[in-house]
Every structure is written in C-alpha cells, then in structure tokens.
Image (cartoon, rainbow, N blue to C red; front, side, top):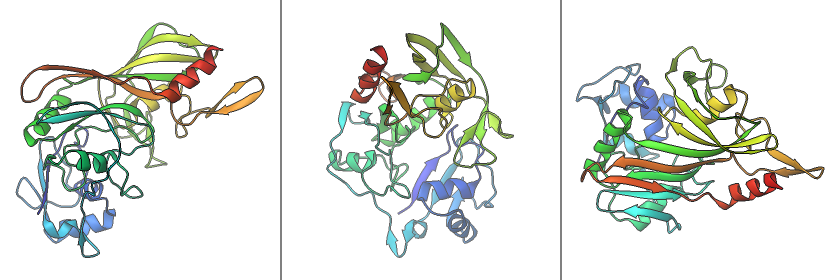
Length: 310
C-alpha cells in the first residue's frame, strides 16, 4: 500500500517534508524521518527533505510511512448526511455545510466530508488515499458551498490540470464589513504570515500572485453583500484580500473585525465567516461536457441578511 499524488499549482514550491507532513497528518519531524530513511520518492528518486516541489512532480509514500503507532491510517466510512448536487462514475459534487472539515486531519479524524463520501460511495479515487482520495480543492471548515471530489483517477488528474490552468470558474457570495460600491479587482500577492504560520498575509516576504474580482449585489447599513470570483486559489484568499482592503468578512474570527452585529442595542453573534461557495463551472474532465452547479445560500447567511435588512 502506498500514497501516490501529483503536485498541483497550490502546492508548488512547498518543501518535501512539509507536503509529507500535510498528506499524512503527522509532525514535520516524523515526515523528515520518513524521507531520510527512504520511504518517500519524488519522480521515482530519493530527494532531500528540503527539496522544493515542482508542478507535476509525482510523490510516492510507501506503506511503512502510513503506519502510526503500528496501525495503518484508514478513512473511516461514516453515515453522515450530505447534499449531493451531482454524481457520475467519475466525480461527485456536494454542497458542504459550514462546520464540516473536508478531509481527516489532526483534531478531526472523523466527521469529515471524506468520511461521509467513503460511506455513501463505495468507489473513491486512489490518488490521495488513504485520507484524501480525489481531493482537488478544498473549502475552509466554516465556509459552506459547492465542492467537487474526483471518484476516479482519470477525473482527478483532469481536474488538477484544469485548476492549474485556471479553467475552473468559482464564484462565492460574501457579506463584508463596510459599504462597497460597484465592482473591483484585488491583486495583492498572498503568502504565509511571518509571525503566525497558521495565517496568510498580503505582506509576506514569500508571496504568490493572487487575483480576486468582486461585484456588489446589495448594500446594507455598514455591510455589503458581494459576489466574488477567484482567478487564483490561494489559501484563505477571499478572507485575506477583503481584510487587506479594510472590508473583512463579517464573522471572520481570524482576519475579521466583528463577529457580531448590533441590533436595537443588542449584540447578535455571527456563527462563522459569512462566505459561501455559490457556483462552480468547468468542463467534465472525462466526457468534456459543460458542467455548472450552484449551491443555495444557507439558512444562517439568510438569517443574517434578514437582520441587516430590518
């Protein structure tokens, strides 16, 4: 048994030990140990732990690397209800609820979208196994909306290529602090924050191109509902970009300004960042068919909009 995966544009430039740590949900030190003892190969060759991965590099992590405390990591099927927007023999599109993690990781071994998919769909892609089969993009835990998962290896590689070439169109709906007008484009580069490695920043020394287009849909007093298109796919891109221009997402506890709204001298808590992956559009990676799917605005965002309207 082994984990095999190709490096996409999102992970290009990362160190080998970091990507192994992320893929296996283990410490950086443990990942370095596996690399040094020859359990990890890149393009069928041994590499140093500091090797900077390139797009399309093929990484293979062998069976012994998948064992933690003598037990092989496995994706546990769980009967968790999910809203399936579409499925065929190659891929599935799901409307992910806020609060659900996409795949198992430290602190979230169960209850994830992949645990649910493993139960509802007996066939999953082998790429990214055992814990992330078929994952070609992700949504933050507290971001709701449409996500595509490959359940066939051909679909996986096809989707990875389309994401790399920016051929997948993604649109979001967000409620931001302050009043915006018209439309605009944010082009601030994004990288890992120097003082907090869990956060991203537009002031990072090592930053990558990031492009976010936005259009106002509705104005409220002190808040704005915007439609957002992301041209690139950087971690936390929408949240970081709007925070950087002084209009952070309402309810964002990492990059935001307020996690509540005031109504009739009362502070009403906002449960999460008001961000929803509304629409995705792409060509089917196997059949070539035009695919377009939308995920309805969830009730918690509707409730907040109703409060802002009154």
